[in-house]
Image (cartoon, rainbow over all chains, first blue to last red; front, side, top):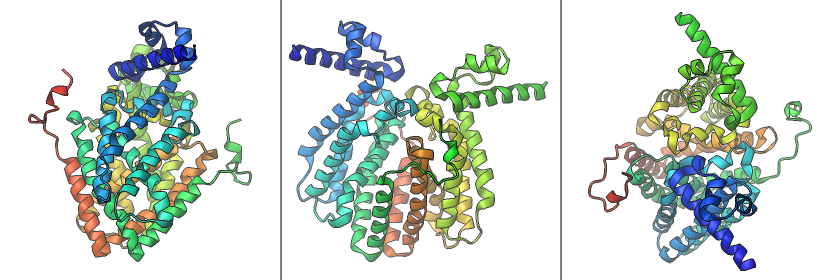
Length: 234
Length: 234
């Protein structure tokens, strides 16, 4: 019974992913997915209560596939620029079938559904996996810094990867070649910027970056002294 | 007659902007806007053929307001960090009433409507205005670099501002305080990074950044030799 339920969920999901690829976010409906998967609409909703939960699951799958494709291609002891280029290209590769979704991938991040934004708590697991893949990339590469900066680099590289993803989602060049140009240029640029930490000027910048990351990660308490307090929604 | 037409367009637009602020992107409809503005739906469509054209107009207005608010606050001869902080905070300030839209602001950038993405040709005029505001900020500040990097800095700072905007759109902290923390930390960090260009290591990085920007700006010809050619949609 559990196995059957798992199979039904997978059937609904695979149908949904095909609809998202072929029709885009707006034209994909739970009703259409259910009809094609041969289950009742109620049954489809049992597995995915909202369309954006499907996109959340798509994030998860893409992240798993990204790691599966990228990890074996990392070259131990290679310069960071090379391994980073490999990982970023692998990311574009696994996303390619979903380019028609465009920033439809971002649609569920809109205000009503912030739970599925890449920064939300609900996205914690795939985000952690994405950050882990960046950590693996750093570990595989030679001469990358340790210490406080080393601890933060996986997250910083993940942010750079999000930037590449956003560029790719908006990329109208044939076969998104422009995004590949971006990756080819960005990987050595990031590696060289990271290597600055060996110089005093780079260490100072690195301290500033770490401080800012700490401040952004700190919990924001409801600001009871702020003059803007009254502006909050009831 | 031209004046009356202009007034009607403005009435439709102001009604639309209020609906976008109060109801969000999805719940705003041309029909609802027309009803409240007291014009026929056909008349409303005459001025704005699609909902995303309203968002395009919103970009334009926000950009104008950003300049109007920020320019008088720039301090001639102040450090770049200070003026940049001023400009970025002014950007958050003018966007604040539209926070409910969230990444609904990005929705029209989805694949079906790429014309209204901030990188599209149709967005050229507001984008150029935004880049000009960054140029003014640099000109007002002391000790900013000239030369090839100086020419590109307005565009690079605009990209940083887009990053702040994206952070703000996804920001769930009370009154988006986290985005203000980001601006307070990012402005001096960007200024210090830019000042690196005085050192040999910074000049080399700067050359790499300019080369990458040139490659990304170059027209992408349909790639007739690529093995992926056949993949393009018919």
